[in-house]
Amino acid sequence: MKCIYCGSETQVTNSRHQKKPNQVWRRRLCKGCSGLFTTLEQADLTTSLLYKNASGHVEPFRRDILFVSLYNSVRHRKTAASDATGLTATVISKLQTHIQSATIDRKNIIKVATEVLKRFDKAAAVTYQAFHP
Image (cartoon, rainbow, N blue to C red; front, side):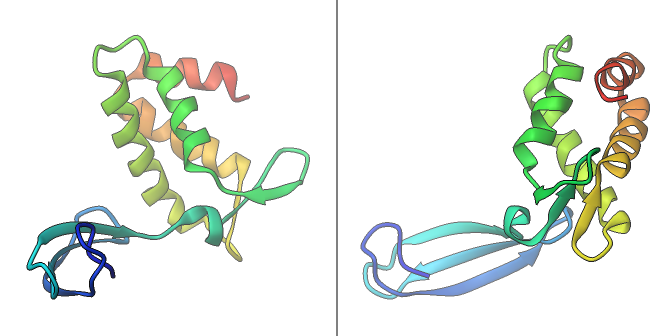
């Protein structure tokens, strides 16, 4: 990886797996300017995962669409943005057991999201179900 300060090559000085699935925290040291910075690596789901909608059409999975639908369900809370971010990560990690041939079905997403929301905020789960029949 290139240094964010000078563009020189870097080396990893420390690396740790995160609690969230498929994430790695790395501390990097620049060989040119001796700058120190941190990176967080995770899988890019838009290039490796497909979403099958209700009509059967397959398209790239977009985390942002899931985030917006969860945010709309929890927007009555004061911490809606951070709640939706955490909920999105939780739903994606739980969806990994439902992936078949790199494709996630809409029904599975709704089922998992509803289960997660019911544990978090029952009103949010009802709102989510109203917009995702």
